[in-house]
Image (tube, rainbow, N blue to C red; front, side):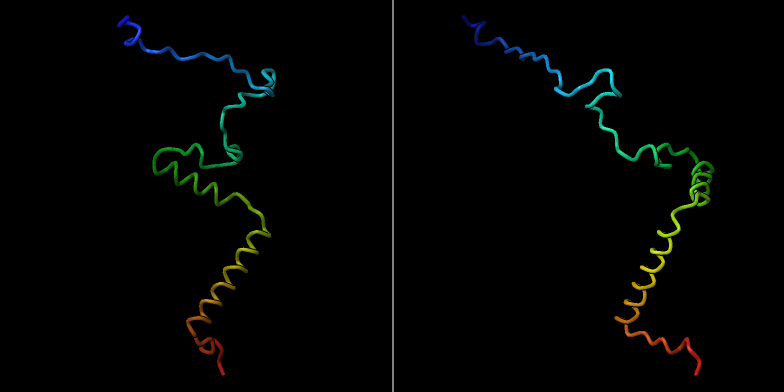
Amino acid sequence: MLSKFTRLRRNKKFEYSPRYFDDKGKGNPFKIEPKFDKYRSTLETPRGLKGKFSNAMADMRRKGDRNLKIRMIVIIAILVLIVLFILDFDLTIFFPK
């Protein structure tokens, strides 16, 4: 009688199979993998100072989207002009009379 109260309860076992799981397809549907891992250059970073420096130089050599660079320069220029306007910076010092 005492063993009935002191005995630990066993966990229930379930046979779960996902509804839309295709075991012949690609990979495990439960494996969480970020979407852009295959495009990242910093995912497998080389060790050491020389490896990090060479990786940074390779990233600089890689060409990016030209429109994105132009858009970024225009946005930065507009923000700088807004900050100079707020600080009441006199731009006439750059233009000779």
